[in-house]
Length: 393
Ligand SMILES: N[C@@H](CCC(=O)N[C@@H](CS)C(=O)NCC(=O)O)C(=O)O
Image (cartoon, rainbow, N blue to C red):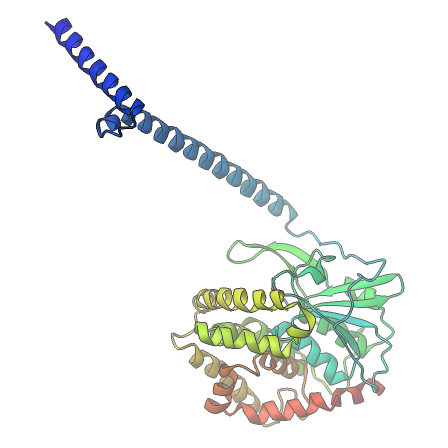
């Protein structure tokens, strides 16, 4: 019986197949055709799924292998020092502009690779301007960054310094300022020797992220002679406030200037104006930077707000920190944190604030706090290069 039923099913299937063949031969697309093609479709679907799973597994395993070997390599590197490189020749990049101060008597030959409105680059520029030290500027394209293609360090600022044997790149705004301040304190130092006092050490931070850190970047090398009229307490306070600017205050800026998409777009257009991007980059490149930058930073700003535990109203966090700074100056009863003259923490705070001068957040800050008194006073000191008087000691 079973054999008969099997035979009957077989002949039925054969009929359907022949009908299907006939229909397809005669251009008739019958719905019964799908009955016959179904297993084939399922097979190809399964084939693609298997290929997908296999490819995913290979990529996943490859990435896991890469991560594990990277982690092992990084653990092995922990505590080791990154080699300082000296360039034999200057990279063939034409400076965007030259900043020349007739008061400059340092003899330093500096090129600053920067973004005009990066807070860390502004810090370095403010330092150089205050002391009246001349420098060339190379404006770096923040998306393509081809102007620093010669450097393994991929952030700005980078200060390239002419030394006896070639060119010494200095990385990290705080280290650059500490090194130059040490040099101004004792010009018998060689820049390349001073650079050795600021080694980059491999380490993992508190979140387990691998990085290179310049351990003593807040320290000045006084070469056994403390600066005149400055106590150890003044020096420690200056160091602590510089650290506060880098580790606390600066983190209130991005979530504020990129607070909404509109604000982010406006901010990038101001960056473009003040950084003269129209002059330095082709139109397509400028538009790419503005549009990609504004969108990316608006999204990143939200993550930064969380990471740095800012208030829901990020403006309030900006005002709170600015007031914290102003209260400390009020307690001192002086114009600046450094007394009657700015110290390195005033210059750092001014530098990072200057980086948002054209943004709505800055105008709001002026309206909602009393920072403008201090801001105008230090602006005057920097614009008149009043620190250059210290160089003729
Ligand atoms: N600690 C560094 C931070 C420098 C930094 O983060 N610079 C940013 C620009 S504001 C950067 O270059 N980021 C990498 C990029 O733009 O791709 C310093 O003080 O110089």
